[in-house]
Length: 478
Image (cartoon, rainbow, N blue to C red):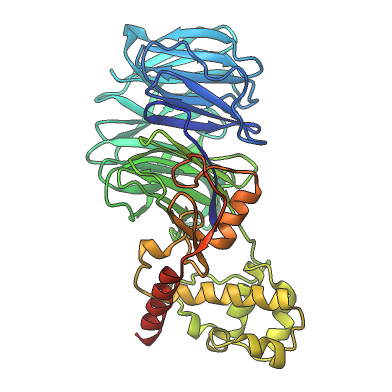
C-alpha cells in the first residue's frame, strides 16, 4: 500500500526535480529556487530556500555523504551548496554557457557530471573545482545521466533518443537508439543481478531503466567488465502510461522502480516481474520527477502542479522459500494450500499458516471465509486478528475483479476502495480510518488541496457507501 503522508507546496512554479539524502529532501523549480526539508518532520530547513540561480533550476542531487547539494540551471551553471548551513560553495560554469539540464555526483563523490542543452557534458573535480573531462553527445540535448555503482562508467540520455555509455575518461563506449522521440530520464540500480551465460557461468549485470517521449519505460541489463568492455541488452518494455514518461528511478534495493508521466500518474513496478504494484494519481498536472529515499520506504513525486507529494510504502516481506510467484497469472480461486500459505506470510499473518493448512484452506476456501467461519470453525478468538484477516481477504477479492474501480470510489489518501467513506471540511470524501490517521498526526490541512481545514468534523457519506455496495454486488455477479 502507498499512503500519501505529506504534501509540500512551497514552490511558486513547476517542480522540476526532487532528491533524497539519508536525512533530507531537496526540491527545485522553475521559480529559480532549491528548497531543503528535514525527513524527520518534513519541515523546511532554516536556510531554505537556496537562491542564487538567475533562471529555472532543472535538477538537484546530494553527494553520497549528504554534505553537499548540487543544482543546475538554465543560467548555464551548476552550483554546490553546503547542506549544514546553506552556504554556496562554488559556481561551475558550463562551456559555452549552455543551459544545464542534469547533474549527478559520482558514487565516490569526487566528481560532478553536468549535461547541457547543447549536448555538452562536463566532469568537474569536486575537490579542486576544476574541469576534469568534457565531451559531447552526437545529437540533441543532454537530458539524463546515471553512474554505474563503481563510478567507472556512466550513461547519458539525449533528446534525440540515444543512450550512450561512457567511461570515466569521457570515452564513448556504446551508443543505442532507445526511444524514438527522445529520452527523458534514466537510472542504474545499485544492486547487480545474476544472468546465466551459454556456458552457465553466472555473470553480474546491473539493471538500467530509461523512459521517453514514446510513452515507454525500458529495462536494460548492462555488463560492466574490464575484459569484455560494456554489454547492453534490452530486457523488457513496461507499458502502463498513456502519455510521455518524464521520470523513472529505482528503489535503493533495486526491487522496485517508479515512473511519472504527462498522464499525471505515478506507477510503481516490481522490477523482477514488471508487475504494477501501485498507481498513484494525486497530481493534477504532469508528473516531472520521482525518487525513492535511501534505506527507508519513502517516495517523493513532484509535478507541474507546484507540489511535491511524499508517500509511505507499506512493504510486507514474504516468508523465505514461500512466495506466490505471479499472482496475476494464477487466479486466486485456483491457489493451492501452499499458495495460501505464501499469501499469509506476505500479509504478515505467518502465525496462521499451520492452522490454515490443518483446515485445508485453498484459494477457493480462502475467498469464502466469513467472520463466523474464522470464529467458529478456525477458532480464532481475537476479534482484532479476525478483523485483520477479513480485511486482507476483502483486499484479495478486489484483485479478482477484472474491471477498474471507479475513481470516485477510491480514497484519495490510500487509493484503495473505501469501506467507510466520510466527508471532510474540504468537501472531499475519504476512508474514515485514513483521514483520522491524517488528522491524528497533527495535520490540519486538506490532503487534496493542502489548504487549512476550518473544521475537523467528519460526516458519513452514506450515499457513496451505498453506491460502492451496489457496485460490489454487481461485480460479484459477473
